[in-house]
Image 1: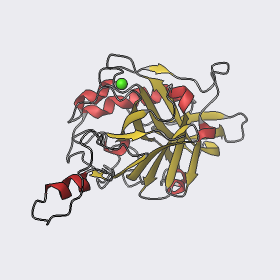
Image 2 (image 1 turned 135 degrees about the horizontal axis):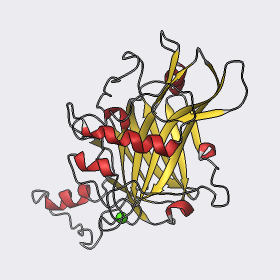
Image 3 (image 1 turned 180 degrees about the horizontal axis):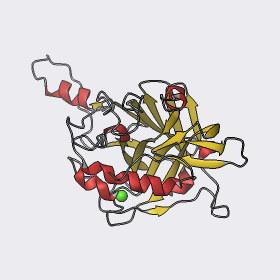
Image 4 (image 1 turned 180 degrees about the vertical axis):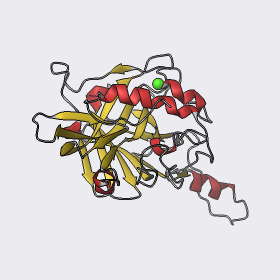
Length: 292
Ligand SMILES: [Ca+2]
């Protein structure tokens, strides 16, 4: 399998891992990929009232037919599907099981928050009997910034999903990782994505939660890296990520997505711990209007 666990001796580039890990979606196991809808769909109530002829003569005017459904400024997903157990390493270790996701545009940033079934510190702090600790891909978010399926693309492995995955213009991959150094040695080595770190030989100096961003092309592919700072390609997105117990929030500046307040964007996410399941862990799409 492509996403084999790596005994961390060398730092592993985020993007390489993410891309390598993406291959695992080819495996299929069980269960579907549906989420409960939590989107507010405004006009439904009023239309329905108009349709109830039995109600007596209240001279209420119908709402204007032209009124388009209102696009909410916040969307969220309840994720009731359990994560699959690990396929390698300690099979009993906790994995990043997403139970809820929300998206909102505020303060010039798209804010994406994943709630897990347990605290993030339980995942990154877990040490197995062989003194291994584990980091992983948690999710990726697909963002259709022009709400147009005819532009953009999708990651190559999305072809295995149960619904059409297309027209997304950006791809943000949420990962955990470690900064560490060899025992008795010096330096800072960073490894992110699906990996196993041998703590018998290494000391963890920092736990990492971060993301990578790519612009998707018109084909199904890996996309093109989007830098936080064009003048400093090594600058990471770490400062735009926050952990609050069981929640991981990432913020993506509008300027990087080439969007502005008022734009409508279509979003779905993929729960990585269900990437091997039927549906490949993709959620349904939701559209939101970006706030100021
Ligand atoms: Ca698009």
